[in-house]
Length: 180
Image 1 (spheres, one colour):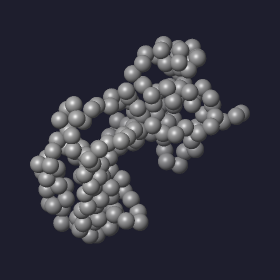
Image 2 (tube, rainbow, N blue to C red):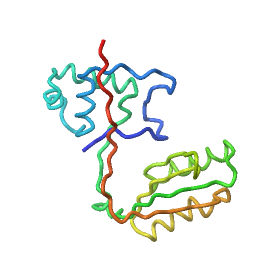
Image 3 (spheres, rainbow, N blue to C red):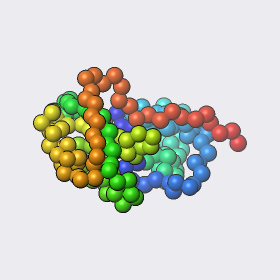
């Protein structure tokens, strides 16, 4: 299954400018997006059949949605357990100094680390929340040393280890279609 994922620091990811108005999405666009979120690995022909449009229409609309930044990228979702990455941690990070440069430096280091699946800058609590996926506790300790303990600006780390994953999804709830 290949859902659309949130934007990351990868320069190859294309997205619309933050100030741009979201494109108007009609019922066909929404059906197309819904089907792509379910399984983007299908052929264009199969996708077009599922949405009840011609293959040319499906391809044209999919490209338009990519160019508009609605579809940021398409990836394969791998099983962490099948690959020996069975430990998931939710980590809260509070920095000692919250200056723009210090925040940007930590964010860049966290986003570049292979063990960090998701990195969120937050408000009203910790400065960052990270979703970390590693092989085991020893691998987490190596990551913690690399990202948290070696950074003098990291004041506090709170970590919560997952004991069971009930849901792991990236599907975005779609709005109702625009009527023109």
